[in-house]
Length: 221
Ligand SMILES: Cc1cc2nc3c(=O)[nH]c(=O)nc-3n(C[C@H](O)[C@H](O)[C@H](O)COP(=O)(O)OP(=O)(O)OC[C@H]3O[C@@H](n4cnc5c(N)ncnc54)[C@H](O)[C@@H]3O)c2cc1C
Image (cartoon, rainbow, N blue to C red; front, side):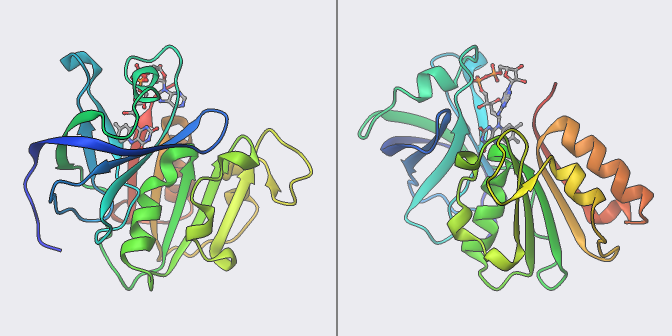
């Protein structure tokens, strides 16, 4: 996929899907934008202070752009985003960001919280042969967005607030602490900033080189 420079597109909503109590998927027209898996777009709101970035969850070859987001009731963008329906206009600027696959042959270990799974979804849809292990931390099982995209053998759900799901109970950092991890893998961290900071410290302590740790913080506590 060739590199393409960010530009502003006037697009339209194709569909809006509710994925869980507070999780949604927005599908929008691609308008011919080329992108590499891991990139984002900036959705434009009614005023510049409402503009927000979203990772592209769909594959490089997919017809439309798929975004996954959580409704933040006190937020500026997402309460308006949930009201969007098919045919509504929506502007975006993209592609932006640098959370890209750097080595297609190296094992890739990806730790996500919540909607931080979006780039991993694009990675695997764009490059199905990728050696990807995904550790996905969510509060409840219904927040395991896009789980069907991943190989169950290398997909580890971590559920922090629901018991009896049959999955690991705890946070992704707890799961990391419970196992052995290859120091030579490339590590991807995406989602809540506190998870990223904690995982980064643990990986560096375990001897993973800084150059092989990539992170994308969606929000800060
Ligand atoms: C590079 C990048 C990529 C991003 N990609 C995505 C994505 O793919 N999907 C996605 O849902 N969000 C993503 N975000 C976050 C997104 O840009 C918005 O911040 C988020 O959707 C909330 O927007 P808002 O205007 O409704 O709330 P805001 O006004 O932005 O935030 C209100 C408050 O909610 C907190 N908050 C923001 N997001 C969350 C969350 N998910 N859970 C809990 N608290 C939160 C903020 O820290 C703030 O305190 C990304 C952010 C960045 C920087």
